[in-house]
Length: 159
Image 1 (tube, rainbow, N blue to C red):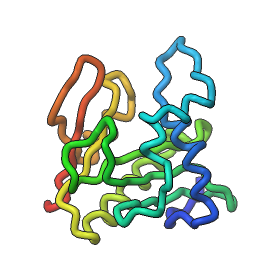
Image 2 (cartoon, helix red, strand yellow; image 1 turned 180 degrees about the horizontal axis):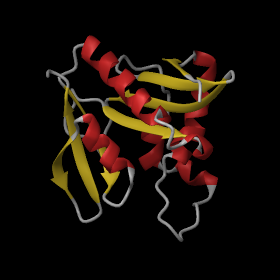
Image 3 (tube, rainbow, N blue to C red; image 1 turned 90 degrees about the vertical axis):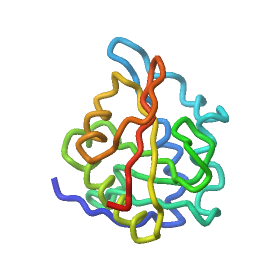
């Protein structure tokens, strides 16, 4: 599949609402929650006023002139928050574009961008049974904390 990775345009920031919804991990046999779940504060922290803070970064994957995925970071008090200098990751793709290596490319692009900007590390939270946790480990994220349901993972950008 042909796709490009590029910075998000201001006119596309509204798409992060779609992508935060797509990022919700659904276990096999469970139903997707209603779309209005993205109005919960726990999810709004990822997207509210995105692009207005100096630590907001986003790259998107585009295929046939359509944005099909996004990877974004910001310093926020989210599930993966470890301190006030470390940006937290969010990433998702529309379902039909998963398992084509696009997520890995998005992640690598964002990791390079964060290195260029001088961040020391980045973090994320992922449910233990989410298949994406293996991708994060392959990319070099390490588990620094574990709860009953999820891992808090960190990537050292200084290596």
